[in-house]
Length: 203
Picture (spheres, helix red, strand yellow):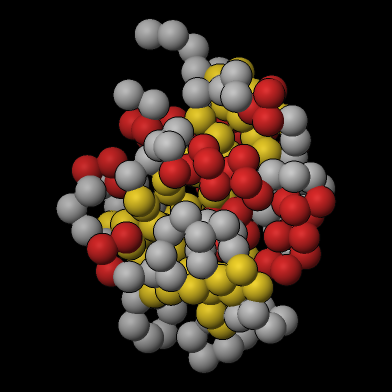
Protein backbone atom coordinates (compact mmCIF):
# COMPACT_ATOMS: atom_id res chain seq x y z
CA UNK A 1 0.00 0.00 0.00
CA UNK A 2 1.46 3.38 -1.02
CA UNK A 3 1.89 6.05 1.62
CA UNK A 4 -0.77 8.74 1.17
CA UNK A 5 0.05 12.44 0.85
CA UNK A 6 -2.26 14.94 2.53
CA UNK A 7 -2.64 18.49 1.23
CA UNK A 8 -3.57 20.82 4.11
CA UNK A 9 -4.94 24.10 2.79
CA UNK A 10 -3.18 27.06 4.43
CA UNK A 11 -5.22 30.26 4.04
CA UNK A 12 -4.36 32.07 7.25
CA UNK A 13 -7.48 31.00 9.18
CA UNK A 14 -7.31 27.68 10.93
CA UNK A 15 -5.45 25.15 12.97
CA UNK A 16 -3.27 23.72 10.24
CA UNK A 17 -0.49 22.81 12.70
CA UNK A 18 -2.67 20.58 14.89
CA UNK A 19 -4.19 18.89 11.83
CA UNK A 20 -0.67 18.33 10.48
CA UNK A 21 0.45 16.78 13.77
CA UNK A 22 -2.52 14.41 13.95
CA UNK A 23 -2.09 13.20 10.37
CA UNK A 24 1.69 13.03 10.63
CA UNK A 25 1.34 10.74 13.68
CA UNK A 26 -0.69 8.42 11.45
CA UNK A 27 2.37 8.23 9.16
CA UNK A 28 0.93 10.26 6.30
CA UNK A 29 2.99 12.74 4.33
CA UNK A 30 1.58 16.24 4.82
CA UNK A 31 1.97 19.35 2.66
CA UNK A 32 0.74 22.59 4.26
CA UNK A 33 0.38 25.14 1.49
CA UNK A 34 -1.71 27.82 -0.18
CA UNK A 35 -0.16 27.02 -3.57
CA UNK A 36 -2.46 24.97 -5.84
CA UNK A 37 0.58 23.42 -7.54
CA UNK A 38 1.77 22.03 -4.20
CA UNK A 39 -1.73 20.93 -3.19
CA UNK A 40 -2.10 19.15 -6.53
CA UNK A 41 0.65 16.76 -5.41
CA UNK A 42 -1.60 15.35 -2.67
CA UNK A 43 -3.98 12.41 -2.67
CA UNK A 44 -6.56 14.19 -0.51
CA UNK A 45 -7.22 17.77 0.60
CA UNK A 46 -7.98 18.87 4.16
CA UNK A 47 -9.53 22.29 4.77
CA UNK A 48 -9.24 23.19 8.48
CA UNK A 49 -10.80 26.29 9.96
CA UNK A 50 -11.53 28.19 13.16
CA UNK A 51 -13.24 31.53 13.68
CA UNK A 52 -15.94 33.28 11.68
CA UNK A 53 -17.26 32.24 8.27
CA UNK A 54 -17.03 35.67 6.54
CA UNK A 55 -13.39 36.16 7.57
CA UNK A 56 -12.51 32.67 6.35
CA UNK A 57 -14.13 33.21 2.95
CA UNK A 58 -12.37 36.57 2.69
CA UNK A 59 -9.04 34.82 3.25
CA UNK A 60 -9.82 32.10 0.71
CA UNK A 61 -10.55 34.82 -1.86
CA UNK A 62 -7.41 36.73 -0.85
CA UNK A 63 -5.29 33.62 -1.47
CA UNK A 64 -7.08 32.89 -4.79
CA UNK A 65 -8.21 29.52 -3.48
CA UNK A 66 -11.98 29.68 -3.96
CA UNK A 67 -12.05 28.69 -7.62
CA UNK A 68 -9.34 26.07 -7.09
CA UNK A 69 -11.20 24.37 -4.21
CA UNK A 70 -14.48 24.48 -6.12
CA UNK A 71 -12.80 22.90 -9.13
CA UNK A 72 -11.14 20.16 -7.08
CA UNK A 73 -14.33 19.41 -5.18
CA UNK A 74 -16.43 19.20 -8.33
CA UNK A 75 -14.02 16.97 -10.17
CA UNK A 76 -14.15 14.43 -7.36
CA UNK A 77 -10.80 14.78 -5.60
CA UNK A 78 -11.03 13.48 -2.01
CA UNK A 79 -11.63 16.56 0.13
CA UNK A 80 -12.36 16.90 3.86
CA UNK A 81 -13.49 20.07 5.66
CA UNK A 82 -13.00 20.23 9.44
CA UNK A 83 -15.04 22.44 11.81
CA UNK A 84 -15.32 25.83 10.06
CA UNK A 85 -13.80 24.07 7.04
CA UNK A 86 -16.92 21.91 6.90
CA UNK A 87 -19.17 24.97 7.00
CA UNK A 88 -17.25 26.57 4.13
CA UNK A 89 -18.44 23.72 1.87
CA UNK A 90 -22.01 25.04 2.20
CA UNK A 91 -23.89 27.37 -0.14
CA UNK A 92 -24.03 30.25 2.34
CA UNK A 93 -23.79 31.20 6.01
CA UNK A 94 -25.97 33.40 8.22
CA UNK A 95 -23.05 34.27 10.51
CA UNK A 96 -22.73 38.09 10.68
CA UNK A 97 -25.13 38.49 7.76
CA UNK A 98 -25.24 36.37 4.60
CA UNK A 99 -21.97 35.20 3.06
CA UNK A 100 -21.62 32.86 0.09
CA UNK A 101 -19.63 29.70 0.71
CA UNK A 102 -17.91 27.32 -1.68
CA UNK A 103 -21.28 25.84 -2.67
CA UNK A 104 -19.98 22.28 -2.91
CA UNK A 105 -22.63 20.62 -0.71
CA UNK A 106 -26.25 21.86 -0.60
CA UNK A 107 -27.33 23.53 2.62
CA UNK A 108 -26.84 26.64 4.73
CA UNK A 109 -24.92 27.46 7.89
CA UNK A 110 -27.32 28.58 10.62
CA UNK A 111 -27.10 29.36 14.36
CA UNK A 112 -26.88 26.41 16.73
CA UNK A 113 -30.40 25.32 17.79
CA UNK A 114 -31.51 27.44 20.72
CA UNK A 115 -28.51 29.73 20.34
CA UNK A 116 -25.36 29.55 22.39
CA UNK A 117 -22.38 27.25 21.91
CA UNK A 118 -21.86 23.53 21.55
CA UNK A 119 -18.51 22.98 23.23
CA UNK A 120 -16.81 19.93 24.72
CA UNK A 121 -17.07 16.19 24.19
CA UNK A 122 -20.16 14.62 22.64
CA UNK A 123 -21.01 11.34 20.96
CA UNK A 124 -21.56 11.21 17.21
CA UNK A 125 -24.25 9.02 15.67
CA UNK A 126 -24.20 7.60 12.16
CA UNK A 127 -27.12 9.29 10.38
CA UNK A 128 -27.47 6.90 7.45
CA UNK A 129 -26.15 3.60 6.13
CA UNK A 130 -22.90 4.96 4.69
CA UNK A 131 -20.42 2.25 5.61
CA UNK A 132 -17.47 4.64 5.67
CA UNK A 133 -18.74 6.12 8.93
CA UNK A 134 -20.03 3.02 10.73
CA UNK A 135 -16.77 2.27 12.56
CA UNK A 136 -16.86 5.52 14.57
CA UNK A 137 -20.60 5.45 15.32
CA UNK A 138 -21.10 6.33 19.01
CA UNK A 139 -17.58 7.60 19.62
CA UNK A 140 -17.04 10.85 21.52
CA UNK A 141 -15.49 13.77 19.63
CA UNK A 142 -14.49 17.29 20.65
CA UNK A 143 -16.74 20.18 19.53
CA UNK A 144 -16.46 23.95 19.66
CA UNK A 145 -18.99 25.82 17.50
CA UNK A 146 -22.06 28.06 17.60
CA UNK A 147 -23.29 27.48 14.01
CA UNK A 148 -24.25 24.26 12.22
CA UNK A 149 -24.33 23.15 8.60
CA UNK A 150 -28.04 22.51 7.97
CA UNK A 151 -27.70 20.14 5.01
CA UNK A 152 -30.53 18.10 3.42
CA UNK A 153 -30.96 14.67 5.01
CA UNK A 154 -29.45 12.78 2.07
CA UNK A 155 -26.08 14.47 2.70
CA UNK A 156 -25.97 13.92 6.47
CA UNK A 157 -23.66 11.17 7.72
CA UNK A 158 -23.26 12.04 11.43
CA UNK A 159 -25.54 13.69 13.97
CA UNK A 160 -25.13 14.71 17.60
CA UNK A 161 -27.55 15.64 20.38
CA UNK A 162 -27.61 17.97 23.35
CA UNK A 163 -31.03 18.34 24.99
CA UNK A 164 -33.21 18.19 21.92
CA UNK A 165 -33.39 16.72 18.46
CA UNK A 166 -30.28 15.51 16.64
CA UNK A 167 -28.46 18.05 14.48
CA UNK A 168 -26.00 17.38 11.64
CA UNK A 169 -22.29 17.22 12.47
CA UNK A 170 -21.06 15.28 9.44
CA UNK A 171 -21.91 15.64 5.74
CA UNK A 172 -20.88 13.87 2.56
CA UNK A 173 -21.35 14.35 -1.16
CA UNK A 174 -19.31 11.79 -3.06
CA UNK A 175 -15.65 12.33 -2.18
CA UNK A 176 -16.47 15.57 -0.34
CA UNK A 177 -16.78 15.18 3.44
CA UNK A 178 -17.29 17.68 6.25
CA UNK A 179 -16.90 17.10 10.00
CA UNK A 180 -18.16 19.78 12.43
CA UNK A 181 -16.06 18.51 15.33
CA UNK A 182 -12.26 18.45 15.69
CA UNK A 183 -10.96 14.92 15.03
CA UNK A 184 -7.42 16.24 15.38
CA UNK A 185 -8.25 17.08 19.04
CA UNK A 186 -10.34 13.97 19.72
CA UNK A 187 -7.58 11.59 20.79
CA UNK A 188 -7.87 7.91 19.72
CA UNK A 189 -11.41 8.29 18.34
CA UNK A 190 -10.39 11.24 16.21
CA UNK A 191 -7.31 9.49 14.88
CA UNK A 192 -9.40 6.44 13.99
CA UNK A 193 -11.79 8.62 12.03
CA UNK A 194 -8.99 10.49 10.25
CA UNK A 195 -7.47 7.20 9.11
CA UNK A 196 -10.88 5.93 8.00
CA UNK A 197 -11.46 9.10 5.96
CA UNK A 198 -8.07 9.07 4.26
CA UNK A 199 -8.06 5.37 3.44
CA UNK A 200 -11.75 5.22 2.52
CA UNK A 201 -11.83 8.28 0.28
CA UNK A 202 -8.52 7.49 -1.44
CA UNK A 203 -9.48 3.98 -2.59
